[in-house]
Image 1: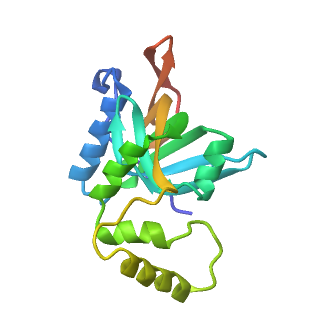
Image 2: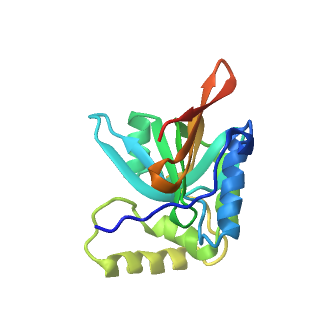
Length: 206
């Protein structure tokens, strides 16, 4: 099997922001300028009550000092698992830049007002699909889904209200790791972890 050599830029402590939220925002912006189509795409991992993990890709739709925001159907598997265990992990990976960010944190529901505001900003077709799709439920075929979409279009010819079973989650982070691929697998890794309200920054061995 062929192996890819990483030739990423050196990542030193002096390159890091003291704030991991700002560091995350900077890397996402650099990814956008670096030609990454959707640098906000992240892998979200949850764990059910039996300890079985699940992972899937979602789009981060908000980043602030509070944490990371994503939206979903509250009847989805991810939402059920978060209710059972709010401890989650998020992972950004940009192979073109030989970079990744790992984040651990606790997920909680956004307020209805916050979810309403974001839903109102979505394209109409995305608003309609939030009503049409019973996310994670077994369906007969594609025709069933498209029929539901037509029914929703007829039900809401004008403004589309937010479904009560759809909204946002906020991931309040407790740990970040920034990883930069380097030659000979001697990668640069830095971990931020919260201790008594202060972010401590540590270099990790690759």
